[in-house]
Image (tube, rainbow, N blue to C red; front, top):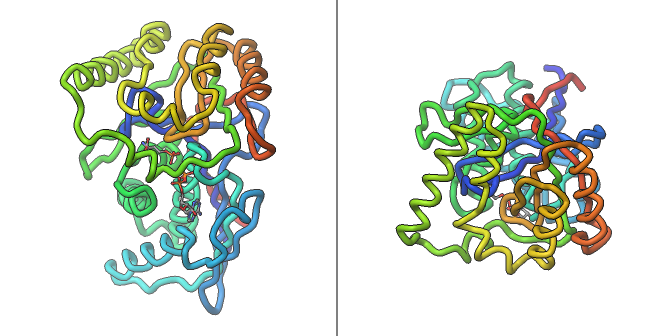
Length: 316
Ligand SMILES: Nc1ncnc2c1ncn2[C@@H]1O[C@H](COP(=O)(O)OP(=O)(O)O)[C@@H](O)[C@H]1O
Ligand SMILES: N[C@@H](CCOP(=O)(O)O)C(=O)O
């Protein structure tokens, strides 16, 4: 079998108004690679090598890397179809920072499963593979949520259905919007950022959540950018999580003052995002965030769009 390489983009989980049920893939407009890659090649025994800018931030033992667990999970699923497990060497290019709010673990998981599936000539369909990806994401964050793995794998902006038969539906995007994503450089554990949230919601919060999500989906379908932006406030996680993000309120105020239409936490943070009506405003917002929100040399800021294409495969 021939070696393959999979690329899986960064993503924004929640997008403020869709806690655990809405996500979007990200693609920097300047062509920067913002996503993990996994290469799968034939070998005499299983091995995982980790390279890339953030490889040193992962535990040294490859067995603890989520990519090794993806391989085991994939082989077990393959065995249930009566096929033999492939013996492979995998290389993870860890390009995304860990605990960043950019769907870093999801990116590794999607790249791993997508590469293994392609290497084995696609034994699993997209929905089946997505269920496996969600299970592995759940092992990392403490509960299954698809809002990173789904857009990362399928591209675009995806809404989770809650039904196993079809995990996601794809939403239209406002094509002229630019999305600034700024990673401050610190790490926030997704599992811990989930633990600080209340287990139940007051009635008024539940009503706001439902109203916002319904209006947002409608607004996307009728291409009403103003209406879509008007409901992009996080009533579930941001009130609790913003305390973990130094400079969050100032960053929001400055971004909105410069013309951003909406501002929020990407996933569980510390990355923040700003949805902007044009590229010029996005560049101005990005400059301010790069100068004021980034806290150390690991931080970065990109002006992005939401790509229609999610994970990709190419021969190695
Ligand atoms: N390939 C991987 N990519 C990212 N995290 C990994 C990977 N393998 C294991 N991990 C572990 O999973 C956890 C990911 O933390 P999390 O806060 O969920 O990150 P993120 O929000 O960026 O996905 C960390 O403890 C990290 O060491
Ligand atoms: N819906 C999840 C998204 C977590 O995204 P991550 O990029 O921080 O892993 C949540 O908000 O917990």
